[in-house]
Length: 416
Ligand code: PLP
Image (cartoon, rainbow, N blue to C red):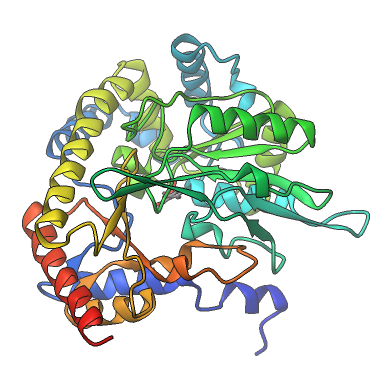
């Protein structure tokens, strides 16, 4: 049997596939320290909340209703209405139910959107997705039907006190041309925890409008929910923006529910794609989210439970890192959101990939930074000097993992 070109492309051993395999292997290896994945934390208060909510929804027949019926291809109407109402009321956005579509996880939303606006066009030209600031989310890298779908721009780097740094969009070198089909940015950013500033976002919005292309904002960690954002950035939406959200980091990754907020014609296109690819998005996640909105719990829990949990964890983790690794050995991207720390081992004598292998051999999993630069045109040593770690595991695990990390960094320098 022979696979098609599509088959060959989508059965490749991509970075994200290897990551998922390592995570799976790690989960089966007793004592492994998993600082690699993107699973959100098991927050006891959220677990208890979901347990209680689902028990009530089961008793009232709402879970059975969600499971026993197909929704329409745009997704569960009740959620579209409740969410549009909440966004109008709390953020003042002119969002109607016709501006929202649901997908099976936001990961599939990116697959739809990238291939809707980039790739081979009717006139034979090819368009690309521009990531204005690399490093960017590893999950985008293989989501194009066409090869070479992505281009990205290196950031400007500002060094900050306490061994921290922050990336900024390098607008002077941002090339938006005839072949740019969309701009896409995760905010907060996976892998770095960066939150591009309101000013940067407004500039990108303006540039996208000028070039008549959409600005896609991946808001998987952002506002108004799950609200894992520690800077005072504000959420932005207008008809030129396609805002992607998710229930995953609220604590419901198994519900596979993504949310796209966009102009009506784009929502119609997404609904049609949903119809062809999956008939309808799953209904249980939307039923839960709808209930959380109606009970006015979704924003309250984001603000009072989820955000403080991650904020405390990240501060503890930075203190742990500094116990073992001084700033001369390890710079840390200013943590402004999301569930990761991005570590920069400046001038490290071995590659991030080699460091990853050495850590893995010692039972510690972190993700080597070089996977997070999809579309970068020229080699850049920085890509081999960074690692992404998830700071969600229990503090003892983080301590043990960081201790081994520090030993491996020292070993690399000693052997240089
Ligand atoms: N976008 C970012 C930045 C992510 O980190 C993730 C998952 O980790 C996703 C999108 C996809 O999430 P999901 O498909 O679970 O909604």
